[in-house]
Amino acid sequence: MKILVTGAAGFIGSNLSEYLLEKGYEVIGLDNFSTGYEKNIISLNKFKNFQFLQGDIRELNTCIKASKGVSIVLHQAALGSVPRSIKDPLTSNEVNINGFLNILEASKQNSVKRFIYAASSSTYGDSKELPKVENSIGKPLSPYAITKYVNELYAEIYSNIYGIETIGLRYFNVFGRRQDPNGTYAAVIPKFISQFLKRESPVINGDGSFSRDFTYIDNVLQMNYLAMTTKNQKAINQVYNTAVGHQTTIKEMAIKIKDELSFYKKDIANIPISFGVERFGDIPHSKASIDKAIFHLNYRPSHNFNSGIENYIKWFMKNEQLH
Image 1 (cartoon, rainbow, N blue to C red):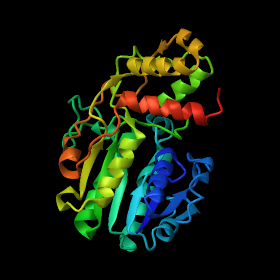
Image 2: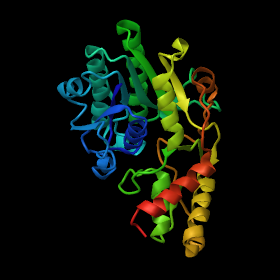
Image 3: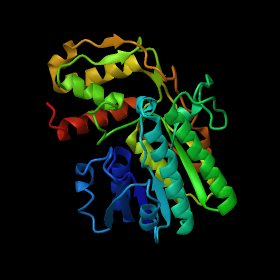
Image 4: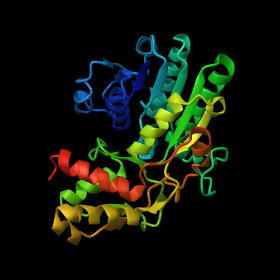
């Protein structure tokens, strides 16, 4: 079976490609290296069943070429980050909506059987309901959140009109190996790890009481695989929370990272955690209900936040030359 992974040089896309290659699937990776890295596909190139295409999902012809002869598309390519979308809504819209529509249309034209895409917990917007349940969302709080919600609407329309099978996975604060600790829009966990290793005091936006359902990468790989392989027709043309179903405050997260790193570098225990102003567009609390994924896809998270952080830091210390 041939599978297209868009965003294959990115954090999630490269992990997903490797996971599928190890299972013996033929994988085509597509990326334009705007947020992905060539170093992320070095380990993929050793697989004979891997083919890489450098290209942009904003070009329909590129999407048509990449999805030719493909059975399943795992669409991970996107411009992430709420702050990035607030600073530059036009580019986020181009990539996340126009690019999404291109790859979806190309999949339709090439008779791709199933289209699985990275949706986002940001779709819950200003909904205060906890835990977050798939069929109950609020109003979007950022351009990024709008783009990810529009993806879901397009996927549903394409399923209803053209018959392509679609499954959306609403990722909740994913972290793990190969996640970029650098750059303006680095995710909070790798950024904090990197800062502690540089003996810098990480700054929490707000008082640290905001909470997230931090989700280790291996849970995300499992969900994509289940979505790919399910034969349950009731599981198709749905959107699923991809999370653990627990919340951890930002302060608890920072303390856990500090404790784990102190095991490797004892002096890190003395670095204080700082607090700054709240970030515009941030939702206060996020916790997923994973009941739907358990019921339809037989999903069982393999890692909670603590075991995920322990694994990630072990990998980080072994692989990153930052210390």
